Structures are given as structure tokens and as C-alpha cells.
Length: 165
Image (cartoon, rainbow, N blue to C red):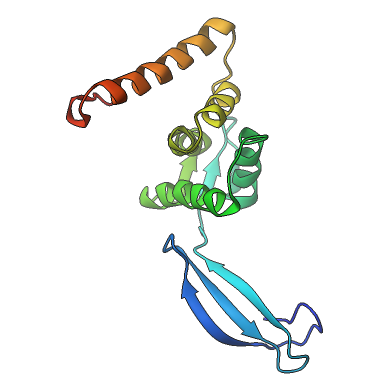
């Protein structure tokens, strides 16, 4: 790993710690040339997953596109960077559990909505309104009512009685 200060091509790891989410490792590094210490993060990377778009085009999965979509939905919402990384990891874990080399963009969108629904309800509605292309106010209200109904069911009944939709 190159030193961010002097650019020396080598640095040594002096400490490694597993992140609380268990999906990344924080490494503390030291540059022997300029004595600078810095941290790096090592995360699991989705490889060889192809996303099939609605129009049939295929493109490689890109984390930055997922992050941009999530940040747009979470705009002006309160969250920590660690929570955001956990959200991205949760979506990617779902994608990995599918064990497929090709996924439809619709499947990725559904994964995102499932994870957003538990992370932030407002962000979920924002994402769903764009993703599902609500045509009118009625379809938007219908989704809000479904969300509110689930919330009411969870508060009013024991977990075993909740019917998953």
C-alpha cells in the first residue's frame, strides 16, 4: 500500500481489527520512509456479478452506483457513515446469498427496498416512489398505507401473528 503522504510504495501493517459488522477489517499501517501512520479498510467485494437492465443491456455490478442511489434516497436524513456502510453491506450480502452470476436490476432494486424499509422508512418511500414509478397520488398513498399497516401490526400483535407480505 502506498503511503498517502510521501508516496513510498510500501507500508507495513502494525495492527488489524475486525469491524463490528464482521464484514470488513481495519488495518493500521506505518510508512518506514516518513514515519506516517494511517488506516485502511478492507471489505468484501462482489465480483463477477452482471446486472441485466430492463432494456436487456448487461453491465458489471458497481458498488458506487448502489451507494449513489442509497445516498439520494437518504438525502437530508440522519444516519452515520458506519450505519450507511452497514446498509450497503446488507444489500450486498443479499445479492451474494443469491449465488447468481447474473441478476436483473429489478432483483437488486427489491433487495435495496427490503433493506431500506428497516433502515429508514422515509428513504424507503423515496426510493420506492422512483423505483416503482408511482404514476399518481393514489398508488403512492397505497404504498404508504401498506407501510403503516405493517407498522401497526408489529406494534399490536405478537411477532408470530404477523403475516409477511
